[in-house]
Image (cartoon, rainbow, N blue to C red):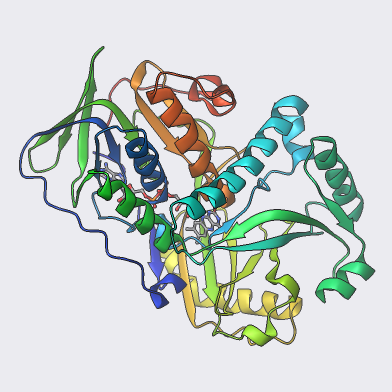
Length: 413
Ligand SMILES: Cc1cc2nc3c(=O)[nH]c(=O)nc-3n(C[C@H](O)[C@H](O)[C@H](O)COP(=O)(O)OP(=O)(O)OC[C@H]3O[C@@H](n4cnc5c(N)ncnc54)[C@H](O)[C@@H]3O)c2cc1C
């Protein structure tokens, strides 16, 4: 059986805003396409839009329906700043690779903003500076080193000592790195917008349809679905989020839990420039504002017991409200919305993207953790290049073959 997680519970803030409806149909008979995309979250939507723009025939399926997985729960700080600081990542994978991963992530956020503008998708995109606050993982002197390492890699970063941090942003902390180039958006509006573009270019969207088994040969891939019909494609894309199928190498990945709250709108109380905030702590607090002035804050914890996770919503909401209140004493931090979800992480903070070893026609996209959306953009670039028969120059940085730990022949068992 394919793995099924309880991806989210509670009421994400995005339910307060309308996202365009994405029409789907039932899969009544066998179907064929150049590419089958499994999963209609933000990763599948980005790939479907890119492949249809390249002129490919695309089928998308989802066992729940479009926008029904983790994508509706994300807090959608779209940051190039990878969860793993550049200095730490360099110790794990080497300086050159770490710098390249950071630079590619930077490019991805800028490419995504350009793509949204070009497609005229109204997803309330805002450009905001970001502040990486000194915390329990990196103190002021390590933050200075981190800022210097980023600058050496060509990524602008300014270290702010406590006085300028307080003067400019009203935040009392031991220091912070100020960066520019990140964005924030409404993830449901973006995902729906991308799927609607793909639909305009004749993508076929079927839901609810669950992929149960996948068989590949030298010339095609045949996917069986629950309920009967099969789909045959030249390439299959597994954009199944944190619900990994058994064929995907487990690699160094872990599913943990995350909680978030959103306050009532209070646009006059938002801190200068509505900077995206995250802490150099483990677990770390992250915060942003929405276009209408709500404040969203979130934090992770390293366990996956779904019942315990859900039972903790009330307690975690209080804790988040208190933490936000300490950062911004003038805010009304009482939650209007509170929710929780599964959250994938890897030890390096980097995603896995590309063909499954031994299965060149099956690609997987796993955009992990706090940079999931930026990584989905990188995935759509790498995968569409591979399907076009060329190779993205950073493909090996994110490939499964480099970091594979186990490999099962059976696909979804
Ligand atoms: C509370 C929270 C906060 C977050 N904050 C951020 C943030 O600030 N910034 C950021 O970049 N990222 C953040 N993330 C991560 C981000 O949400 C994810 O990276 C992103 O949503 C993953 O999108 P996806 O399309 O890969 O997965 P999903 O949205 O989960 O879509 C996968 C889809 O695949 C379908 N599927 C699975 N298996 C099958 C099958 N066998 N057959 C058919 N369909 C199948 C599922 O039904 C699902 O709809 C956050 C996540 C959470 C939960």
